[in-house]
Image (cartoon, rainbow, N blue to C red; front, side, top):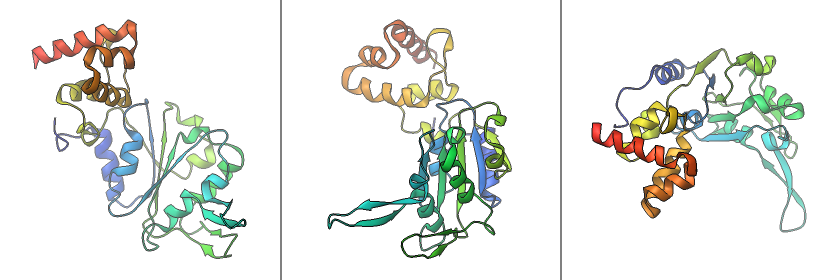
Length: 242
């Protein structure tokens, strides 16, 4: 499979929405389908992409920035990923990727609401320089979540993202670095006993490990003793039938 082969409908939807200029998109669905990969790499162009992994312990300082001690013994302000994405290259704006956004809460959630507000309303003041900062014209935000029920995302945050796309398969570009015999199973998302769902990360790990330690050892390390042989058998059957 080549990276330019037919793209799934979910990724065509994503590309169509981005091409239309819409700058607020939510990608959701089962884990291991490359939502983050797509958010960081597709239709970004020359702009930079910043990523925030949302947890219950995420702080507002990890979003907009914080004071850090310098070698000279004083504190200096360091801007966070959201403001860096607002600025982008030459002030044009980049992309902000918010992973596992349903886990954000408290102060961090309030800050994310401010960072993802509409371009006409979004504004932030640098506490060091007192500069008022606004997102550049090319700034965009892609949220990702492994949830299946969109009601689990805080309503105020959900309201900022008018388009939600369920991602149910990896993009071919995310499969391109896998060995040929793993691309179809990774696209299907299943392998081994009862076609259990396997994340794209596991396929990457298995592919890397077997180059160094052989397939049996790699399967045991990644999939465990109980499933390793079934995975190897499934790959062998696939190799014969292809």
